[in-house]
Length: 259
Ligand code: NAP
Image (tube, rainbow, N blue to C red):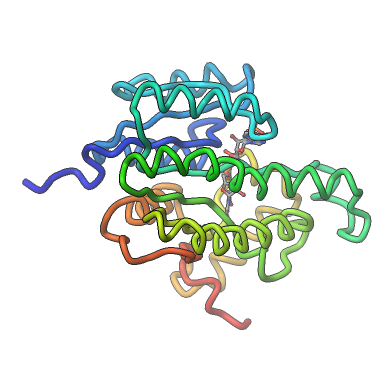
C-alpha cells in the first residue's frame, strides 16, 4: 500500500461556497489524501454550508475569512500558527465581480467595479500568501495554488472585468513564485475549463461557453471539479516539487485550439 499523497501535510482552503465549489472539490480530495485541511467561509450566510461539508475533516479549523478584511486574515493565520505551528499548502479559490460588470459592455466597467474585482480576485492571493509565508517557512517550504480561467488571455463573452482580474492573478503567481521560490514555497495556478458553480452562474451566456467546449475542445467535453481537484493534488504535493510559476491548463485541451 502506498502512502496517501498528502499525508502529514497541513493545508488551508479559502473560497468554498457550497458542494459545487472547485475549492470544496480540492479540500475534499486533499483530506482523502491524508492532509489536515482547514477551511473558511466568506460570511455567516455560508458558514453552515461549509461546516456541514467539512464535518468529517479531522483536526481542522473552520473559520470566517473575507479576503477584503485584513483583520480576519490576520486572525485566521494566527489561529493556524497556534494550532499547527506551520502550514504546508494554501488553496485560493476566491473570486468576485459585480453582476452588472458581467452583463454590460466591458467599456462600461465602473472604477469601483474594476477595483472590487481586482481586489477580491487577485490582490487576495498576495494578501494570503504574505501571511502564509512565515508559517510555510516553519514547515520548510510550501505550495500555493490558485484558480484561474483562460479569459485572462483571450476574450470570452461577458467575462469582462473578471478576465482582467485573472490576468492580474496569473501575473501575481509569477511574481510570487519568483520571490518565494528561495524559501521553497511554490506558487502555481490551475486554469480550469468552465464548470457550473455559483460563481459561474453569474456569467451570462455561461451555458453557451460550456457547449463550445463540448464542440471544440480536443477531448470533446467539459471538465469536472474532481478533475480540477486531481490536478490540484499534484500541485499541492511533492510530485510537483520542481514546478512553480506555472499556469496549468485543465480544460480538455481547449486552450490549444485556434478555431
Ligand atoms: P464558487 O463556488 O462560487 O467559489 C467562489 C468563492 O469565492 C465563493 O466561495 C465566494 O463566496 C468566494 N468569495 C467571493 N468574495 C469573497 C471574499 N470577499 N472573501 C472570501 N471569499 C470570497 O465558484 P467556483 O467556480 O468554484 O470558483 C472558484 C475559483 O475558480 C474562482 O477563482 C473562479 O474564478 C475559478 N474558476 C472557475 C471556473 C468555473 O467555470 N467555475 C473556471 C475557471 C476558474 P460567495 O459565494 O459568498 O461570494
